[in-house]
Length: 165
Image (cartoon, rainbow, N blue to C red; front, top):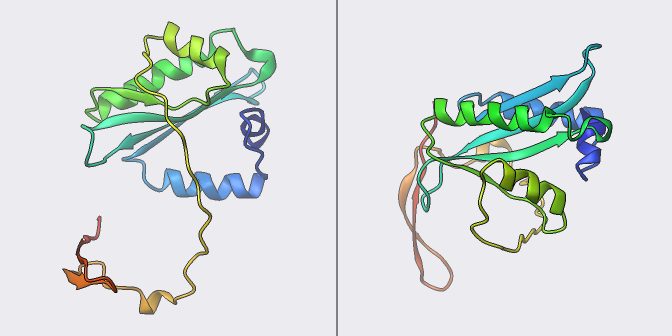
């Protein structure tokens, strides 16, 4: 699967991919990973769909990634994976599926449009690297904490954090 992820444009080591898989699959209520294999059980494609639970949108499923090996493209593998992600979306009660695709992936855009997707917007993606917190877990804030705090410029912030069980 790491080789396929590299073909998607995101090189990753087997160890790093294994760690990411463990994290995603630890929340099966919000993630579904589908892997297509050949007759020798070698992965030839995968699709990762996640349930979006954001304030600004009704519940939706987002295709986080879909890749088919270069030699198996245009053989129906991608379409089959995409169709199966729709079943996950229905099971989650989602009424739509979303896909984000790099503007340079014109072949992928045609694939999604043939599958019934429509372009709804063009946007930029911004990223900023952050340094993980060095604070020991014992010093982490209480996840049940609720309350207002004031910052240095006098803005009042409310934190509503709950533990998901």
